[in-house]
Amino acid sequence: MPPRKSAKPVSFVERHGLWSSAQQRAVAGIERAIKAHKLELVRFSFADQHGVLRGKTLLASEVASALRNGVTMTTTLLAKDTSHKSVFPVFTAGGGFDMPEMQGGADFVMIADPSTFKVLPWADKTGWVLCDMYFGNGKPVPFSTRAILRSALGRLNDAGYDFMAGLEVEFHLFRLENARLSPADATWPPQAPDVSLLSQGYQYLTESRFDMLDPAVAILRQGIVALGLPLRSVEIELGPSQVEFTFRPQVGLAAADTMILFRSAVKQIARRNGYLASFMCRPALPNVMSSGWHLHQSLIERKSKRNAFVAADGLSRLGRHYLAGLLEHARAAAAFTTPTINGYKRYRSYSLAPDRAIWARDNRGVMMRLLGEPGDNATHLENRVGEPAANPYLYFASQIYAGLDGIARELEPGPSADTPYEMTAALLPKGLGEALAALRADDVFRTAFSPGFIDYFAHIKGAELARFAKDSPQPSDPLDQATITAWEQNEYLDLF
Image (cartoon, rainbow, N blue to C red):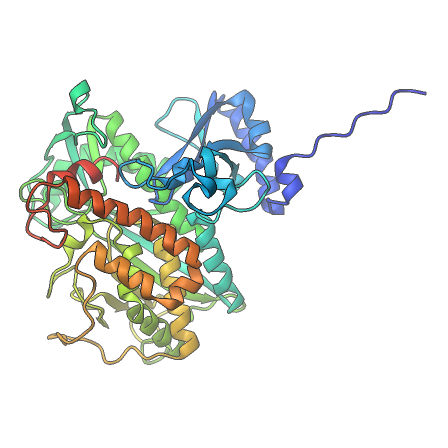
């Protein structure tokens, strides 16, 4: 008898049923792209708890297997705060998480989402793919923020709606003067690079300032377009060396993935060309202005594909309930919309970054702005309190869960806070510590995100606060809005 042929090994993806049929079809496209572009490397990346990309780079010859069987990463990466220090006792029983899969620096597995594959226009013969996180037993890692948003979108889909989001993102673009690469500067976290301005500020949207910045901005713009991201506009903001990119609306996970790749791409392209791009809210530099991230959002009826916020009188009944939910949970959501110590130094009364949970029609001085004329198919809400360093998966999920609660309870947002708005409205947290306390106390978020995730996230951000209090020279009050400390500059300028 002829020898029996050995069975084809079953891959990790197949064993655990991790890909949809569309993702399975996309794999063939990746393999064709590697050959067509003669790629030599592919970066496998995941977005960590802070929305920062981490991962490994594989030779093209290893990609076919890695797509199907994953790439291992240490679970200690999920234990780190913004200084990249582990803040859980990972070498104790349960690793500080009461989870055997997390102890001892054990591995988790990155499984590529083939639909996210890109050829990087700035890196020679290099591809990139975004990954999801699983333990070796096939269970999803509960601290995966991309998975958390996917769950929130699932809840929304079950209610009959899709989430549509448009991004409006401000950031600073500096000339890199000194990368601070001497051994003495390699502290933990490292010393912030020295930078200079590309333009003076306060000439908001003037063409002359745009032309002054255009040589640097054009490099970024061309890279973002080459990636296939839905860039809509490039604008000059109010502050020195401050710009804004806006993106066309996308449905579901795609908009959050766009934000992740956009930030990473901008930082990499800028650095390769002698610039430093920073999504830190308010850098510790004289005269610079705070940067924000305005999230435009609406719900789309899954069956009819109709905008569920549209109504003849401006905002539908469902839209009002959704808006009321965002206001109701605004204090707790601040930990996700504004997750750094630095971000709270942007909030001001009667400003473009308001300090209270209020709404109005087309009024830039409120937290929630209603845009669209009565009956307009583009009617949507704009949340103006986010900082550009926020993790988009958590930012989006907080909006969805807050809005769903408003819909379920049929909450009403109250009257529009037109000028002058009511100063009695609920104040947003004045600092990260207050935001974390509000998050811990919010039963809706605790149930929706899971108690384990809320405790995990609050612990990591609490460690950040504790280091600030310990290491920052006076004044070290995290509520001090007048002073941006060197601690904040070292912690956030180059990370975000």
